[in-house]
Amino acid sequence: MSAADRGGAVPPVPDTRTSAPDTRHSAPNARRSAPATRRSVTATRKTIAAGFLLPALVLLGALVVYPIGFSVYRSFFDKSGDHFAGLDNYIELFTDDTILTAVKNNAIWLAVAPTVATALGLIFAVLTERVRWGTAFKLIVFMPMAISMLAAGIIFRLVYEQDPSRGIANAVAVGVHDTFSESAGYPKAHPLPVHPLEPDGDGGFVTERRVRAGTQVPLPLVGVAPAKMPADALPAEAARPDGDRVTGTAWLDFTPGGGGRPNAIDPGERGLGGLVVEAVRDGEVVASATATANGTFSLPAAADGALLRLPESNFREPYNGVEWLGPALVTPAIIGSYLWMWAGFAMVLIAAGLASVPRELLEAARVDGAGEWQVFRRITVPLLAPVLAVVMVTLMINVLKIFDLVLIIPPGSSQADANVLALQLYRSSFGTDADLGVGSAIAVLLLLLVIPMMLINVRRTRRETRR
Image (cartoon, rainbow, N blue to C red; front, side, top):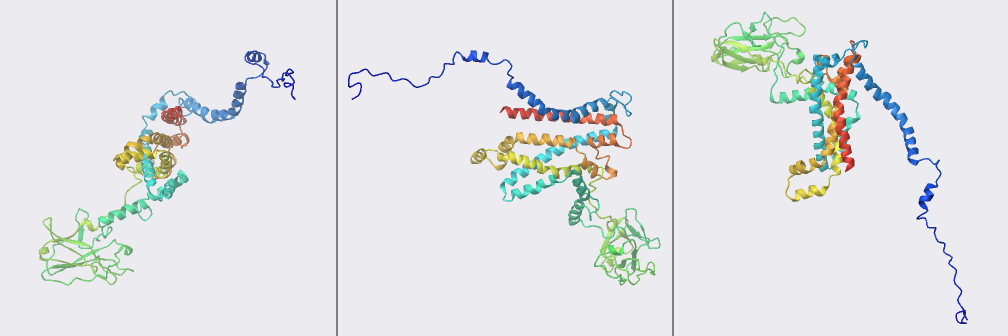
């Protein structure tokens, strides 16, 4: 029986729970009672950060800040560095023809190379999204980035070689040209003084006397190397006289091994097949014929009493390609080699940005009836604008420092026409007639050109961070 049933009082149950001390009013007192010697965590972190940053700051000052400051200081002194020159070095930058050429070429580089490289990268990035072998194509396009500028310069020096048998660019140009325009057959051929031919003043040759029907007219030439003769050339033969026509033979009047007679067809001498022969009377062509493989030709009766002419088209120099590394095209040619290297860099960055473009927007535009060009121009490009800006600014800074390609690719005769500021900086500072004052001024000019692009990049980065 319990105590309650017996009528006794129930003893109170002791509360064993521990109550938490009331700290609502004691917390400020506790803070005030903290030891005064305790160090701030923030101050400790600043000290540690400064310790870690100090080596980097020392290197930054020694390798970047000090050279910049010394270059600015040195640019105000003369060639020897002993006398103050004021702004003379900077005035020379805009009065010296060699440096002005470098400034002009840098402007061309700055306007063309980053824009074209970014455009190519954008096109490659968009198109490779639609093909199965897009990854392989990107690998091939990006592969030149693994090649140094020096090696790329050597490669393109060979690509732009003037001789079509060595330079691939001119080999392609000559192949395309010869497909649509036939080359001359005998560019080096000419008559000897003992031959019955004389120059006509236009690059061709004409007979000394008028020809008559029924007679045989010899047209001997020399100056054609046996190895350059057509493969189908046959031994020369004397043409058969024809009473109503003017006949003759055009042949290479050269006997292998010597011993031949001038103006006579000797054994071993071959005909000049394909040579064009014209009959000219009073300055007008009245008849023409083409020599056969054995050199014989036949003209109609209209040629009677006319002069026979071998026109200039028989002796025109063959098309030898484009002078890629000449004064007119050397800068565009070097820019082409730069695009070969850096278009892959632009493509990879733009492709990374393209992968983050919401596909729902593209599909919605197509559902609404937009064509592929409209989707590309009004949606893809605006969404990629931040990435395109990064690529453009990066390439513009890179272009201002271009040096290796301009040093390696142009031959000596075109070096001055391809000159840029970075190369001129090297020549002015370390050339045979070094002028460190002018070299320092060029370095400061390059720094001033790079700073705006750096500021654009910094502002863009801050805007992206705030978003």
